[in-house]
Length: 100
Image (tube, rainbow, N blue to C red; front, side, top):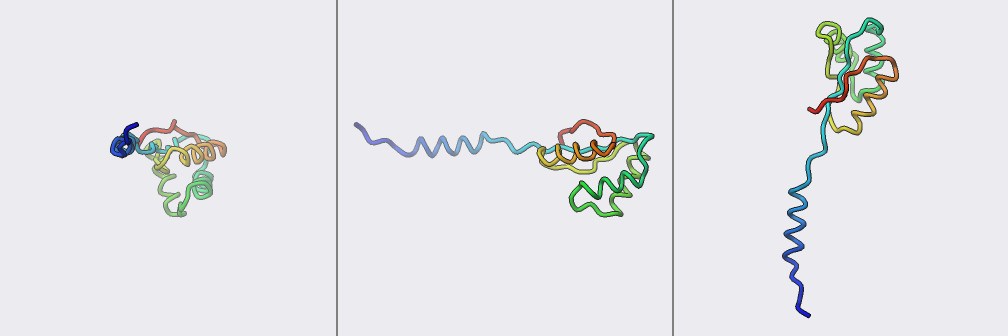
């Protein structure tokens, strides 16, 4: 039997690394509605979105009201799905997750 070369394995490993796609990132978007108060939106954002400050939550609530929607978080799909579900579970009107 001939001796196997390790070069093809290294080439395959390198090719595998090059073929990997980055983890998809998405936007979590809250939509304006006639149901939720500013205070409720702010409370939910601060409760569920990591590192959300009161000032930023109020800015986003005003953006939602004034522009009809706001991106409240963007990043990897898995945590985005959780935040989307949590905010929607509190009665906020959510847009479908969108690619960044």
